[in-house]
Image (cartoon, rainbow, N blue to C red; front, side, top):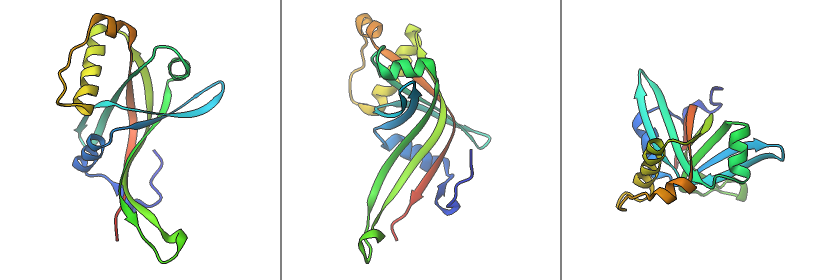
Length: 165
C-alpha cells in the first residue's frame, strides 16, 4: 500500500482499528464492471486478527445473487473498501476552514461468493452478530438457498483519523 501522505493521521494501534470496524455499520465497496466504476454501501460482519503486527481482515456481506453487484463481483473480484465514523464538526474562522473530526478505514482486497452451506451460515452469523447482536439467529434452508453471501479478503488497509483541535 502507498504510504499515507499525512502520516501523523495514520492509526496503527490494533485496538483502535478494531474499535472503528466494530462501531461502523456500513462498508462502502468500490467495484467495476463494463459500465464503469461504482460504489455500493452495505452492512457487514467481520473477522479481524493480528499476527506479528499484520492484520488479517475478512468482511462478510449478503444480497441478491443477480444484478449489477453480483455480476461485477463475479467478473472482477478486485474491490476497494471504505468505512468511517464522524466524531464531530470542526468549526473554523471562515467557511472553507470548517471540517470534520473522523476515523476511517480504507483498503483493497478480493471478493468471492460463498456457496457452501456451513460457510454461508458462518458469514451470515458474523453479519448478525455485528449488526444485531441481541437478535435470535436462525436460517431456514429456503433463505440460505436464495441469499448470496460474499467474503472480502482485505489484502491491505489503513486507518486514519482527524482529531478535534
